Image 1 (cartoon, rainbow, N blue to C red):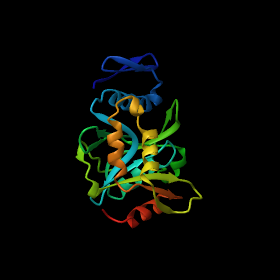
Image 2 (tube, rainbow, N blue to C red):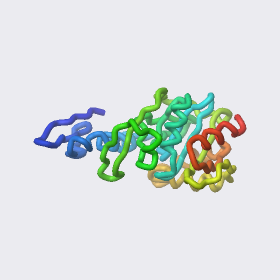
Image 3 (cartoon, rainbow, N blue to C red):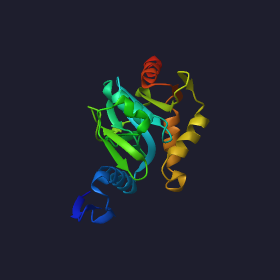
Image 4 (cartoon, rainbow, N blue to C red):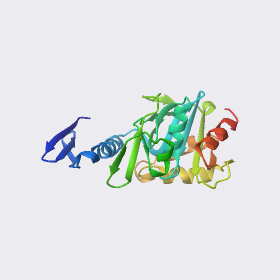
Length: 227
């Protein structure tokens, strides 16, 4: 993938592999590049299902964190990275259709305004769609495919809310499967092999994690039974 940025008066014309993706004002360049790479990475995969999820490897266990936007998964993945986890990504997760393996997309974590107070020194960027955002990269990004071993992986659905009571509630496989299908890009209309991926993931002891702070979330994750 080749990125070009060419000055056009007071704007910058951005292309990826020769395809124009926009001409933002200078301050908006970073969010545009992030969104472009995410979109193009997802659109060029053939053998991998794409899940809207964060993921880390923490204490030898892979944590897969699928969730809707503004659920807190990006902030939680960053907190885990700062707590020593290897960081696979905060937004896109690739799962092989035919083999038990996954691959992250370890770009910088994108934080929304609700998390700014936790990281006050990071510069603020203006995203034309999401509003103000900040970017931070955890210290241990993990690149390339890794095996998805049921004995060392856990499916966790994060749900942040300021007045949440901290709790980890086991989910029935059927409920977890529906949630996964909602977070899968394109659903089964893209490739029916997605069903086998969902079946594989629902075997990873799914749990709903409700928490009012990242500290509470980390404590809950530490309390979960190991594989």
